[in-house]
Length: 460
Image 1 (spheres, helix red, strand yellow):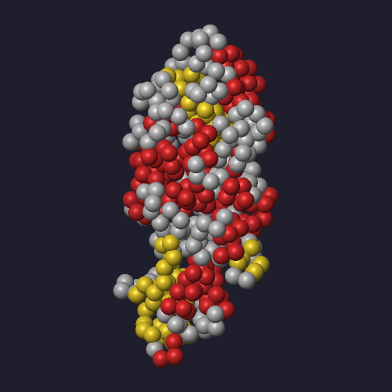
Image 2: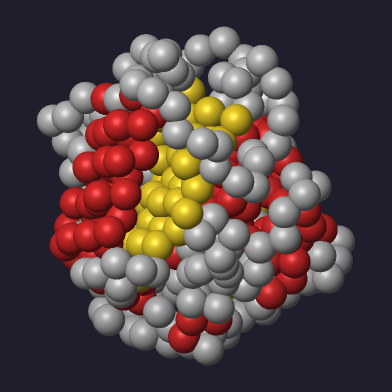
């Protein structure tokens, strides 16, 4: 689909999708102002508290009901889950005393949808590091001559930064958190004093494979879900001139256009290439930190971010920059917590992914009050307030007291995260509902989460 040029920005189909709530598989996506409003620390306050008295992993069975709040909660859960139908899975775990609160079909593997991003987030934080940043570079072959003429080619090499784009787009889409083509052009013009490029500006997106989509579409373009196309070099969230065209070449065209606006003569090669060994680095921009990238991914449930981080993991720790290799790296990272879900991609769009509520909660419980866990909590939307959870339990006692990751595909509706109960109990939970329509299932999930917070399961 042809983008509309706006002074260094490109408004593509992704902007329309964002506005209509179709980007991501975690429910209706919020506007970007809601993403920016979910600042780190808000979520921590919602579920903060003392470390659990034990690090015991979630048990496999549900304890006998006790009097008071526990019995009332179990009765409430039975009621709402009966309305959801037979294809449900639930696991709720008390982080304070290290004991399970409720379990139903908790070991049954189901499609996690975007709850899968909890695994992707964990692997990115542990294997890449929360402070790591991704680079986009301009390299040159040749030399600078008289009158600012670069005799040779310039290569725009992508490092898998999903935020790279125009300054206007980064401000609108990422709340100003991202790297921009204007920064690269300014370095070339202001610092190197380039006035003309005798050769071409060439796109280099070879860090990842060239497939624009994920396994859910046979790796073909999946703009409705991704809001763009995948690649190691993307611009404005994977925007392209037409579906199936190279996002890398489109990015190089935008660099050339920005140089021309600065009165630098530059032209783009219509096919991508690879920067030769020994090419000199002339300009560099860096992404926000991984801890920020996972927040930008998880709050709106951004599928393109998820798969680009997955390919990044494959490139660095696997054989190559593919979703399949990255999925193996994620599986290896998660296996350290003693769980082995079936991981096919990083976004959860593929229905071939399989995970159980127990596996998700086991991970959440093990991460609780660890450095990685604290960053994860900051990366999640606040139930009833932000991101894809904004409408869940809104206006109830649960609003602002839980952080969680949604996961929705057609007739698959999930929520997993942490809640702070009415009297201070800290819960890790996973709710998987298959069968009902998403709207009805989200309503039931909202009622369940509200009762989890409202009912004091610790009172005698």
